[in-house]
Length: 490
Image (tube, rainbow, N blue to C red):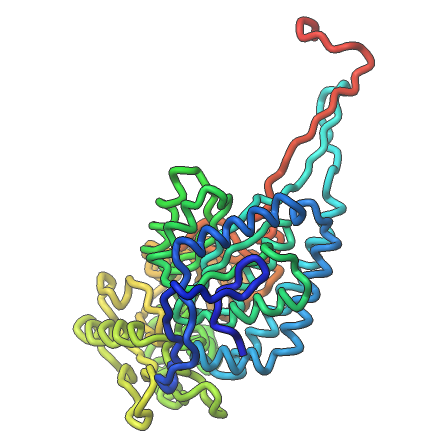
């Protein structure tokens, strides 16, 4: 499956002059596929192809036409769901049921934006009520142009869908650069687009390292819009690269999110959400609830249950039944996690995990770790983990819980577990986060806005907000007065 080539202007290309790199199965450390690495020439080819497609025909298509193509992409993803999920397991490491759900969600994303594309036709040219009868004013919603998209390794196919589907629905064209750790399913997304009949140049895929391709793609004069999901450090560089040309940039960056458990919560329920919040996807998600705040009366019994349940979680290859945590996505990421856990033991008490499983001789596996009472100034408490690490602290009352949860440079997500609905609502109004979960965690829906505050990024993805990222409103005003216009007379 897959070609290992670049997808530019509707063709699969492997220029002889291009360097190669290898995708690796993180569960076995075995190579999966050799891939072509784009250079500056290929960046220019892809962007120019996207510009030609946009200017010549794509921007003039109706929402109905674009919706039919997006439905076609969804159909192809659905037909190949099992094969795509297997590929995602091999390339990323996540458990197969999670990968299968990702593919289903990606298909649902394209279907959702197919509907918004069709609905966009009905919004075009709607009249505005203005205060001068001599004029009529209407609003057109035009695509932004060529969009450069950068997606992370966390949910490879799904994050690509979250970017590509709204961009195409709006009438923009795309050049997408997936993470070099997990590029394979994005290539398969291009294959689905090709099978659906998407015109040449509308979607282009570049492979390679962000440090080399990122500046060239962002600064290309024919790129009109940039969307980036990844680390805070890289997002800052992307914004700086786009600044000279005042290009609009949508950023989804890191997070350091808290799950707050009050003493009226059921312990088993709270622990279930805490495990899911911290360790789902091996903790490799910007919305991971890597801080657990527990009211003091519940602290000790909950901690005991949490440690026992964490130790019972099965770590292993994603295709094995019963596995909850697969390997981390890359070797460098594993080394970073080992260093973080070693540093954490100087600032907190390690209750369980944090070691490489002795029965797994290969692969980038690590046991989920639980720390108690870390120093609030420690890297363990303040830095994004992107791995299966959970830090637990106690609190006395609502005010202290809010102070601890909001004490972060980020503002992506937060969660509250309580039996008191009024308390839950009171907390949700005061948590400084773009997403708040009440008595749940990681409840994500394509219809709802997604994004954070402060250094977690700007703007919102998904829902109609995702579509709006790739649209620019245009005012069209016509003089319809009965008398000739004179600028000297009111």
